[in-house]
Length: 272
Image 1 (spheres, helix red, strand yellow):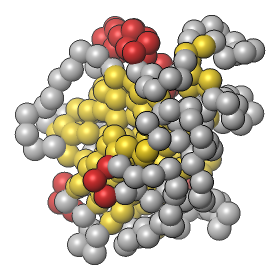
Image 2 (tube, one colour):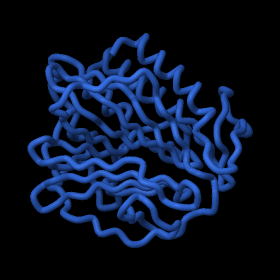
Image 3 (cartoon, one colour):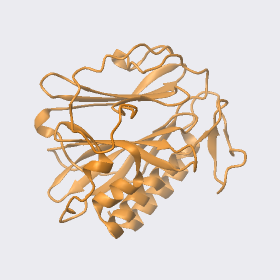
């Protein structure tokens, strides 16, 4: 996508975020934050600005144009970031290192951004075009503790066989800044709603993992995750036949509300 249109979509997000607040939480300027702008401030610390996730995605695209797709993936990813490719999960720093650049760059278009109240996690969902192929992608972005910038920790996608969708705006939504949910791991409830309590996770069939140089047992598995303030969680589950399920839940109105649910058959995995 041309940079001008990407910039226009980012501008549209800035207009949308004023209306994404739910409940009684107010929007305010984070104290001491550089650069201005408005965002939701968590009582637990941190702030959420969906426009920062969109901007990080644009920066990835621009970097890919300057340095190549795989180099851009590595530079915008966290050290322990994972990518799902051909039914396997791999650490992208090893997976992308030294790979031959594609003949053409995939074009990504951000459509939705969901964020935890404290801004520690942002989920970007959008569409991609790669030659004749097109589909969807989801990228999990994590705020880095030292610099406060965003690096992605999980990227996955899927091919669509129907007509390519189009849109003229980016929708941003931030979780309620209510009471913190309890528990150590997310458990997406059936039907999209549930209490604030978080139960144990049954991850299902784990995809094959490719050993990566420098990988340690201490590295987290980002297929399932929870924001620092427990207001956003995501989970990737695999059935025995390889079907992939991705869910994202946001704390809204005192409940976990399912904002994204995708199922991908094995033959339709892959993408950008």
